[in-house]
Length: 493
Image (cartoon, rainbow, N blue to C red; front, top):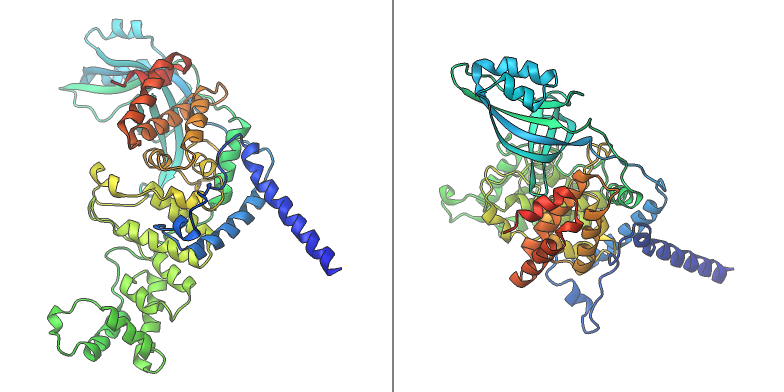
């Protein structure tokens, strides 16, 4: 009986693994399985230089397996729609400020361009081009109101303009500000070819989006925003610092002592269970850090080994870390610490979001120059070694649709493009993206997004010969791509 039960469980486990492996076939992706390990490589070689230990990665694999199984039980045919979009002629008007109200009235009535030139003989029309227009409406936490973002562009890139309301059904869309009637005034305007409309995404792409939302829990947030950079001081921690200083650093002038060192941390760990003052102050400091978000790295080190991993992780998530400049790596290091702790605590929802934040460089900095980006690794290898279809997961974060949850994870085109240059499945990525750019059933706006992703990938390839080969291939096959992608290809020198 026991043997039959064990055999049944083994067969069930095998069947589940077969179902997981079939996932890539269901979504028409190739090369997203487990990374092939050279025969001479050991497990230690495989995990060398990674953010997470081999033991933590093995535990994360088990969680990923269960989530893959849950994904197979999701709605079999998810439906996602593109953002509302159309095609339009974009142009810039330069006109006398006193004539702007009359021009606006004419645009609302749907005036044609020949009529417009006749009514306003001195008007200048510049930068005329055929573009994709798409818009998205969402709640702005800073402005405390709903704002519509209008995207205008093609394969060369997209600009965005903000409006308080979605575009009307008229043929003209325009953006004006307060005018100086004594001066010339510039107006951005778009003459639409047809009304805005949404289209349903093909099933294969819908499954990518659904997989991203399955693996990246849309109800989880990393930072709990309880405290800021200049939040309230943690007085119990400061009092404990004073006691520790007096006990361990008697020969150091207090004015030169600014932080607790490793010996001080060891002292706290030794004294916690026998020194009532240390225990009371550390407990109060941790409690206050959890409530107000006014902890710090030193307090978290002091609490490590005394409090659970879950508590230390919660403390880190309760405080915000900002970067002061491009070279300030503090936000990334903080996210890395959160990801490492989450992997050790086996908290997948926190781990995957923190890891993707590192990949996508989703951090706040007071300033950030492009020159600093090169030193920030993407850590795609960690995802590929989790035996999940990382390509599907990341591509599912690129699509822009009108009906994903507001907390759907959105990837960064530049960072993900760079990440795939480090992928074991780069060839499969290239083939997939080229196919998507030509897919007649995919909406033009998303096709352009994936073209921009591919261009970021090409320019991040380490060898110039590889970069040139892929750009030249795009030029040679330009005629096979849609109009708006050809515009991006023509921009290459």
